[in-house]
Image 1 (cartoon, rainbow, N blue to C red):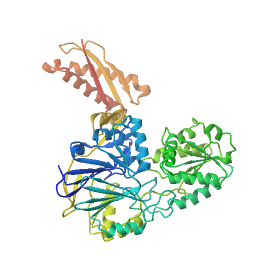
Image 2: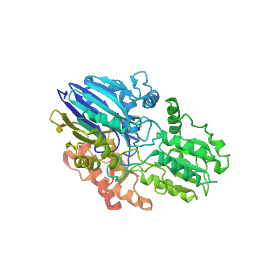
Image 3: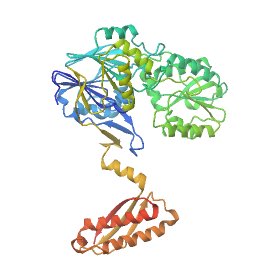
Image 4: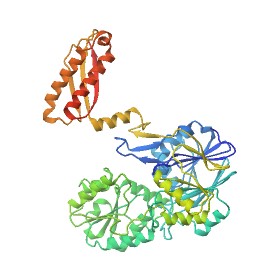
Length: 550
């Protein structure tokens, strides 16, 4: 579909889920992409680390794609760039800090010379086809969080990106209420808005309050070795922790490559100007326990991150009974179990665990209901398009916006093509949307046979059967049986013996043409072994039959 004299909106990722943000705007025959993110995997995709949006719709229309504008540097907004930007073949646009992190990703992928990356100054603008785009700084849990004002011949869009309200953000200068009101005064057709925290009755809170809370918490841990874990990308929090270390007479030590990368990028972009020189890990262990503050990655329980290795005593940083770990971060949904395992491992060692349930040591980067209501009053859109949330979040925001006086709202999901103007909003059609996974070095369909088989293997186990038959279909070798993930243990010998008999009987019972049909032989053996497995373990395992010719 080529956009006509209209303004269209299409989410390929990030609507109906939190993460993997990929949004398209269509106008006068052209498309604009806002963000190109990914999400981290979950147990539904065993063995997979990253999940991407299916970009087939726009890949079939690349000649009409004018560019990719990035709102900020969180992985769910830029993480897919090194995997797809080269194939999309259009320029990228980002503010300096975001551009620096994107450039590092391109270098790591070896495509920095093949992808055009343009730096837009903070508060700057860019014109791409029928779209005039201006960056508007908003507070968020990373440096240079931005909304976008997108002007088109058919109306203005205020695309929030990820945001919150914060009078003391520690890093950056967000747009003021007066500046946002001025945008609303000029007329806004559609507000495309973050829905993540719509169920929170209170505002998200300020980084200034976290600064005070962290100082109080660390000061109260006098004489202990203290590890603080936070999101590496939260530059304001890193600045706060450096200040807390200085105020409490501690030297700062950094444990985690992502922290090193963010700190370097922030300094190069003009942030963290007063960040102290850090102590190497081996030197940190020689300091008195109460004179070091360690910043570590791994607050989400990641097995390979610094904190998990510290908890498991496989890291240069060592903790003992009486020491403390401060979680200056929230639990991302889906990570509760692995975070809980880290907590329990630490507590078993006698290490004190401090979370945001006990102290004011973390605030969200997304708006609660009061902040959403304030933004509605300033922007005053004709249409509200909730994004960045599960369907329950977006539905709630749609109803909130209508209750607060926004004339129209629409609940959409990935793949819904929405006409915003003229005479919008309404759903025009549904286009292909879906997911791809990064499996090792291969990008594969998330709903493909490989993922389905891997899930079944994890749930049911696998029985492999091998035997040889001659051209007449007569068995001419013993039946070999091997298993993976079948919990029989001491009963395995009896199971294998019974399975061998069942497989041989299944071959012998075949008659006529089916007796010489190798496909029929393999299927008969498969079903016989599956029934045998069900008798022994109470479920139907996967069965693989290897039929050898003789």
